[in-house]
Length: 111
Image 1 (cartoon, helix red, strand yellow):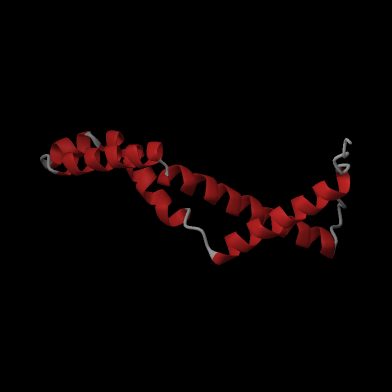
Image 2: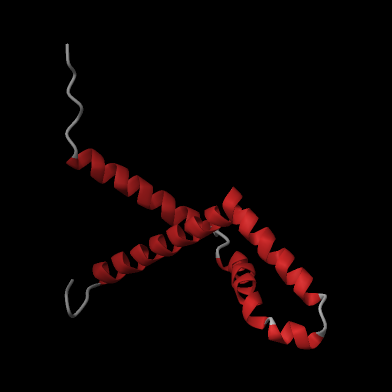
């Protein structure tokens, strides 16, 4: 990378950043929609619902216990995949396939 930066360098870094963001969102979203993720989400939401039925002083006392549930519930809007995410991941897959085809030798056919 050039210290001064170039237009091409800037574009490549921006696209790499978009791909990494999209990949991270896809992984977290995939986990949350998987069986273990849905069990975790359900358990935390049940914990939150039950705690909200307690008197206010007890709710305040249990605030640290509720924190993981608050974090998980706040992730859903942050990990929603956009069309830009899908486009970035598709472009990265095509680029990776092209690079692999150029770097890897074709399979030898044995007769």
